[in-house]
Image (cartoon, rainbow, N blue to C red):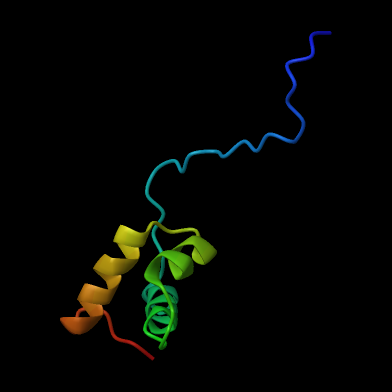
Amino acid sequence: MMDDGFVGRYEVVEPRRGNRRSPDDVKARIVAESLEPGVRVVDVARRHGVIANQLSDWRRQARDCILILP
């Protein structure tokens, strides 16, 4: 076995495949969480397994009254 000097671990991240359809009530809860003071969109998106751009789009839909928040 060859020693390359690496000490640590590897993490394999699987890419998302296809479009997931989230129910409106789930989207609304995630958007509401992202609107809390001091919360970053990217952190909320990561926690829920969506990309930040998608969450930003849901937030726009909420502003435009397309997505109704609880």
